[in-house]
Figure 1 (spheres, rainbow, N blue to C red):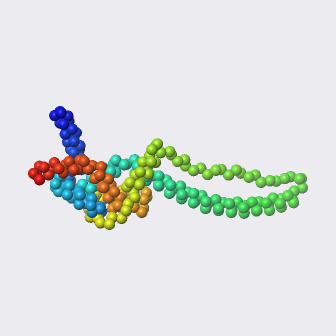
Figure 2 (cartoon, rainbow, N blue to C red; figure 1 turned 135 degrees about the horizontal axis):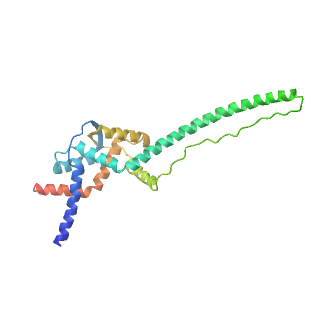
Length: 232
């Protein structure tokens, strides 16, 4: 029993050590840009950091959470972004093709009328019974770029991602944080293409909220361990 207990403790220790190395090593946010998260998440992180890692700033912690999220969901983010770009390009091409078709059709009717008149005049002038006709060229079908099929499952993953992170409700109560400008710029560009109605703060808050829920066991364990060390 003692060996089993030691094994479980080691696995839990490994989990908290991994979390500490990824999110609680500190550092500085060099190029800061303002953002917001929900007040409840802010207060929870503030309380957690004040006990477990007092030297780690709120901004650095949240920036590390965002960086880890972007790396984890790189495939879904890239797919959503490029699919939307391709859809917009196809829409523009279709509109341009419709306009071009209208212009070409009008021009073709005019040329047919002129050609018919010219042919009639030639028929009247012919003395050897020669006939003339119009050689109509077949219109070549418009070549549209073929859509590349996504790997199986990616469409569903993208749908889940949009529902989970890009359905952003307004933050009734929020708190100010600063994160790396590079991450803010990336998020702005992403939302502008994929979901223009989603707010940057709402998107960031969804990511932070999901992280806190997923990593709750490690966070609570680290907190309790530190509190025990302080004798509280």
